[in-house]
Length: 250
Ligand SMILES: Nc1ncnc2c1ncn2[C@@H]1O[C@H](COP(=O)(O)OP(=O)(O)O)[C@@H](O)[C@H]1O
Ligand SMILES: [Mg+2]
Image 1 (cartoon, helix red, strand yellow):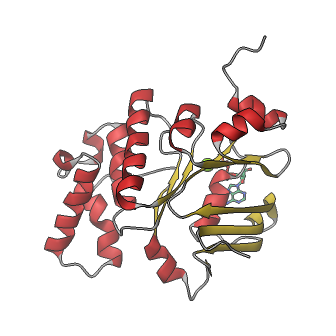
Image 2: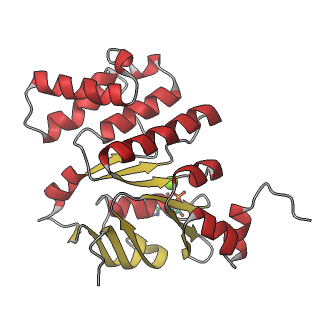
């Protein structure tokens, strides 16, 4: 049975690639409006799970649904319009201005006229405080600004769910903090659901409602809950050491 307030449901999912199961028997729900974090060491399968959620790769077995719909030929067009994605590479097109990058999904998926696309693209850039960068090339702005342009592009179609794969990778703590503020503000303003891959503990405690943690060695999900509950209550040494890293134990 699915809870009606769940926007994403994974039920006994085997995640991976044809001939290579990476994570076994993964089950969890993500609620509407939730900021949900995918956690775990490098290579454990966070991006793999994300690629299943965004319909890039089919799950190996089990059921993955967005708002009750599984990815397939009949649902692909509809589901694609309801999600926004910032991939781990996060790349903007270097030969296009920031505004052109943000307008790209509108050109592909909306019927807006050029003038309306420009208007909407400018609005999106302003919402990430980059109205001034519209005519700049990606190479002319900082890494943190490029991430914000990529997030603006992911929001272009006003999606219900936004997927961000390691948005703060390579950013300094101050820029990373600003990015967290942006995610919180966008959720408050638009009620979107966010699914975010990150390793940053401060960020997890600042933005996450709940997190799922995966372990490569065990090939599955090893924890699910609020960061506070996971830090305080997990009896799993792997989970405990992640949440308490950097702290001195007497
Ligand atoms: N296209 C692919 N085919 C087969 N194995 C893959 C493919 N892409 C990634 N993998 C493997 O899946 C595992 C998980 O990768 P990934 O999901 O990218 O990890 P994470 O995002 O947690 O760092 C790794 O062992 C990786 O080598
Ligand atoms: Mg990854």
